[in-house]
Image (cartoon, rainbow, N blue to C red):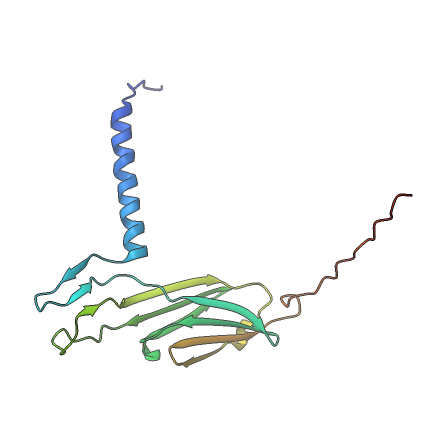
Length: 164
């Protein structure tokens, strides 16, 4: 049997508002980082927050190439794994600033752990992945099979005939 309940729109609205506030707080925390604060030594710094490396993917010379910006990350602190066509890059950028350092007025760099998981396109030879780290950029390359490579498509143009 179904039980009838009295509809209380204000209670439902308050619940919706709390959920929306929580979602918005989470969104702003992820996008803009933690709250900024003045430390006891007078340095303005952000609280630690999650951060994500920026990633570019492209095909060049029959190779799938992925660039992940990891400035300030020690390559020893990066873990790359591949499960099927899901690529995961994990790591950590450690805080290396000294509040007592002379002249240090502001600290805004994000640090802490990160994890990015991407679905790779079909048709890559994932058994031949190569990883290289140079100047703060992690580069992954793997051969792309013919079906993944871009194909040129010619556009045919029809001439319009003039009316007599």
